[in-house]
Image (cartoon, rainbow, N blue to C red; front, side, top):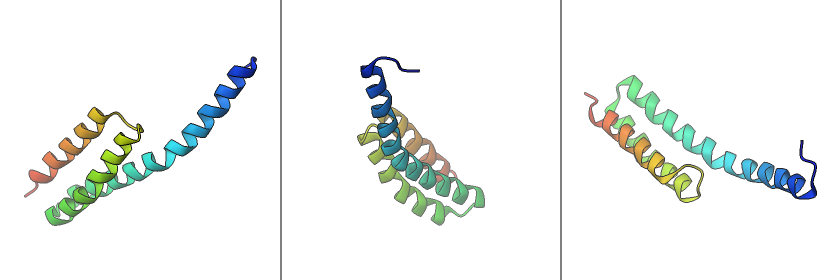
Length: 87
């Protein structure tokens, strides 16, 4: 437990930042889930549309510092590869 005033303030700041970061992170994960569900169903056009919608959300999360830019690029790349290999 935080004892000093600065540590108590840091706890408040972290809680506030976590709450703000939660919204775009959840949004990004929802878009990724939609792509993965479309891939699982085997529908290539739906998967392509879902990927086209998910890519800006993933990169926006990276731009805001929610995820690292390399992580975002890797996620987009792997999803694109899986969509491309669909029959």
